[in-house]
Each structure stands twice: as structure tokens, then as C-alpha cells.
Image 1 (cartoon, helix red, strand yellow):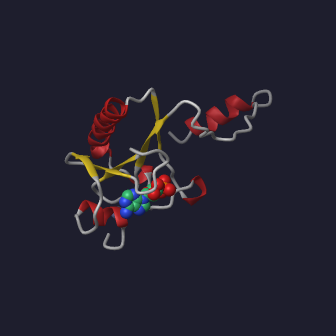
Image 2 (tube, helix red, strand yellow):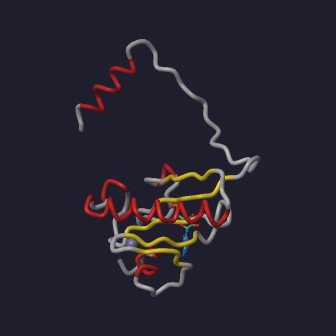
Length: 136
Ligand code: AMP
Ligand code: ZN
């Protein structure tokens, strides 16, 4: 994809601070980090979101995530970190080449999802489970 920023980083047409790569994944520093060291794990083959990610690249993606997480923990002396991915504009995705965020966390860093947790009305949890299982 010639107009995709991450494809252009993968082919080295655009610059990035590359941390690690294997056959399936490239890991770079996010240019607008939540915290310094915030890393993106990007599949080398273009796909829009998680559902388009080729299953053959799962092991390579997971290996890259663990290698980089380990390096972040050791180099930045982290007590914790988040791994997350935004899929779809409604979920906050802004670059439509799938990627996984790994971001350091610190005590009192004031990063919070503001959530209003629901409870299932009687029986609804089973209905939801059945709906989802029917599409597996
Ligand atoms: P998302 O909003 O989940 O799609 O995340 C996209 C991320 O890509 C954002 O955190 C951006 O800061 C980051 N980003 C966009 N362009 C670049 C770039 N050229 N190099 C590194 N990170 C980038
Ligand atoms: Zn791409």
C-alpha cells in the first residue's frame, strides 16, 4: 500500500526508530507516545485490522510483542505496562494498518479509562454468550 504510513516505514521509505523486527513484524517507537518508550508492533504484511491479520503471522507478532515488552521492562525498569489495540475508527484507530501498542505505566501517571460498568439483567449474560458462540 503506497499511501500507508506503516507500509512506507516497513519498506524504509519513511524514517522510524526501529527497535526490533522478525519475518512477520516490525517494532517502532510511536512518534506521539503516551509515555516515552511507547512502542508499536506492526505486521509486515498490510492488513486493516485484527480480523484481517493473517494467522500465519500470529507467532511472529507474539514473539515481537514479548521481546519488546521484555526490553521495555528491563531498560525502563517498569513495574507494569499495557498492551492494547484499537480496531475501527469508533474504537480510536487512526492508522488503518493493524498495530499493537505497548506502553509503559507508572505509579500515579493518571492514565485511566473512564468506565461506567454495567451489570447484565437476569439471564442476559447467557443470551450474549449464546449469540457470540453461534458465530464462532
Ligand atoms: P491508533 O490511533 O491506534 O491507530 O494508533 C496510531 C499510532 O500511530 C498513534 O499513536 C500515532 O502516534 C502513531 N503514528 C502515526 N504515524 C507515525 C509514524 N510515522 N511513526 C511512528 N508512529 C506513528
Ligand atoms: Zn500498510
